[in-house]
Amino acid sequence: MPLLSRMIGTPLAVDIGPGAVSGLAPLLADRRISSGGHVAVVVGPGLGEEIAATLRPSLENAVIWTVEGGTVDAASDLATRLRGGFYDAVVGIGGGRTIDTAKHAATLTGLPMVAVATSLAHDGLASPVASLEHDGRKASYGVQIPIAVMVDLDYVRRSELPMRRAGIGDTVSNLGAVADWRLAERERGEPVDGVAVMFAHTAAMAILHRPDGVEDDAFLIALADALVLSGLAMATAGSSRPCSGADHEILHAIDHLFPGTAHHGELAGAASLFTAFLRGDDAVFGALDGCLARHGLPRTPADLGLADAQFAQAVLYAPDTRPDRYTILEHLDLDGGEVQRRVSAFVEAVDS
Image 1: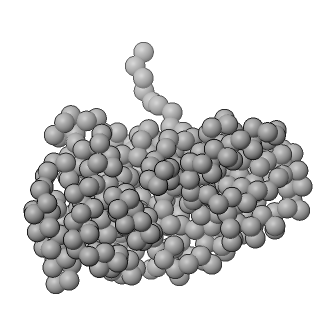
Image 2: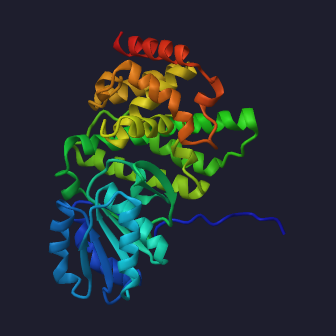
Image 3: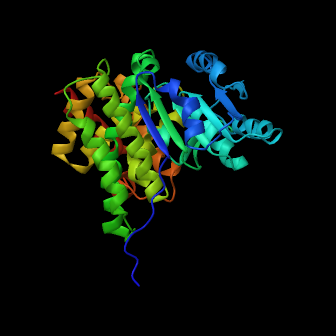
């Protein structure tokens, strides 16, 4: 009998809106994740601690730990603490660093994980990937997707403006990632998952042309939806391929060569604009440029705080960050002089 369908893993619940955090305890019980609330709540500094304090009366059996996340060591330490007790699940509350740390630790210990996002800076809140630093370098680690995802807009609105805008860049960069995947299919016969492409492309297009912005609840809901959809695209593909192409190679190179330059999503947006220029895709280049400009996101190396020569250095180094990935950078295989020329032409095109 032919296989007529397939199962795609998704969270049991996704709750996006004002006051969503107040539904955490009922969600744990209703979804039978933890009827008694015996969970480990992992929070980051700032809003995570504030949210944990508000939840304590409704989660009397929970333990609450504050972690300085973002590293493999932090995730390993957290996993050790989890193994020392008996918990039904891990709840990660905070930004991307905290959630990625909790996802990795939960995977190491075989526990389900609930993501409670306080910012919309990138698509990690519902993805099967944790981006963590190890020995001074950031890398991506495969993890289980969260069993539930909550985004409370009351807290998202309080996050710093660059953090709210950064998720836009990460979302629209899906267009470049999909183009790179299609290129790898044509040039190397790499199989492309059409369902994953559909999720990733739909997420990007939901944001690309919207006239409203991060001060509007309707836009924040659309952005949260798009980030969750991007996570589902990666879960469907079994890799970050539908949401990570040459743009992410460049941003990881920048993170390595010039750490602290900008937020992940800001780098993704600017790098995706550059890769659209490399492809000669005028329609996508124009749409991306308009989107990034409309939301006040970086578009050029100078906007990122980099000299053109530094950006060119990152472009040259970028393929080394994903040796197994074929993108427009590997396809063109530009030497140092040609990269510098393309970067200069790109800056002129954006500034014109």
